[in-house]
Picture 1: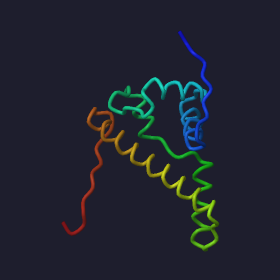
Picture 2: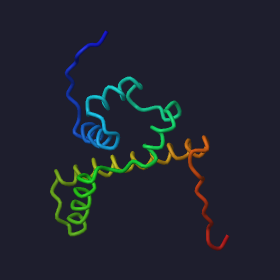
Picture 3: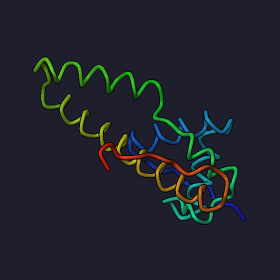
Amino acid sequence: MQHTVTLSISENVANSAEAEARRTSQSVEEVLVSWLNRGGDTDLEAMPDNELLVVCDSMMAVEQQEELSEILDRNREGGLDASSRERMKELMTQYQQGLLRKARALKIAVERGLAAGLNYSLRGQ
């Protein structure tokens, strides 16, 4: 049995869902239902390989990247008001959380043999 529910979600959640919908060719509603069915915060360990690889390749939505770049440029020039500073914090938090999620997904993908490990060397070591 299905139930219809009306929810108010934050702009960040809406933007993330829209970006995920574009990346996966789904509707925003399908993305939100999928997230809810997985318990909200997606459990990367339980994610199927193809979905995990999508997370590994995910990026912040272009519109958000452009907005963040513009706000950071204005910040360097010292021209941000309180609402712009708050928006910069929101976008930076979203960006950092996205990077952390990608890193976790990549670790799991490497463990599953889906991706090559990252090799690096430290100079002078």
